[in-house]
Amino acid sequence: MELPEGEAPVPVKAMIYVGLDELRRRRELLVKLSFPSENLGYALRILDDLERLGVREIAFIEAGGRLDPLMLGKGYRGLVLRARLEDEDAALKILRTDSTVSSLEREAEATSLANSVNVGPLLLGYSSKVLVLELIEGTSLDRWLEKVAEEDSGKLKRVLRGCFEDARKLDVIGLDHGELSDVRKHVIVRSSLEPVIIDFGKASKRRRPSNVTSLFSYFAFGPHSRKILKMLEIDDPPLREVREYKRRMDHRSFMKLIRALNLA
Image (cartoon, rainbow, N blue to C red; front, top):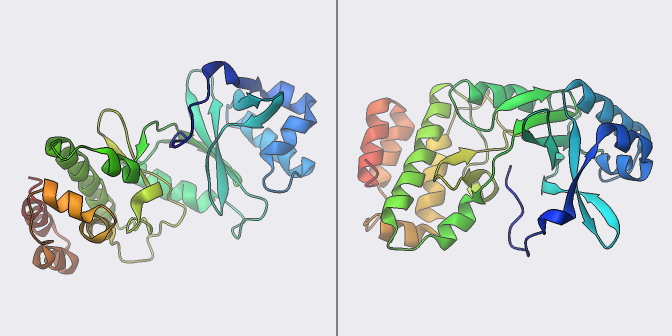
């Protein structure tokens, strides 16, 4: 999961890890695991799940004498916190108390399926209310595209090619991510320039997959399209090739699209 950006970085000394035993004793902290309503019963259920899943500690931020969970993300289904297992840090997705879905199990299944083709953050464990995921540290693709220098076309090509290759893997296994036409919060670029598709909350095998074409739409017509096309030295988006891929969805048409985008 992406670490917060756009604000002054939190000093390291302000982030502390609180063990689950201490959370159980300090109910003013424990109820913060229940969001947005601070329900003690729900928080205790989450705590029990975390113990079974091997979570040792939760990261909190100390500011002005107040402790709040270090929130990596927040959506309409869940909030994402930073945690520590026995030998590694992880991201926790906890189901919101007001979520329109009653369980995260379908998202866990979709994430596991994506992992089977080496896509997405690794699913380390789950319950109906909690996902334990590999912590992905980096920059949102939207912010990365905003900041990348126009002379760094090699870096751009590497990141975009990685995005398309992962999207192609999802197309091949028939898993539609569902939100790649607007990737601002759904792809993180690591410092190694490896893009990682995240958040499979709306993923489904019941729809015809459109991962590659959705990414194409964002890159060709989204907020950074002019910059991207200029850096790729393309005058116009290769619509003929993307239509052929949409119709055929085979390796040959995918590679034709990649070549038309100057990503080969």
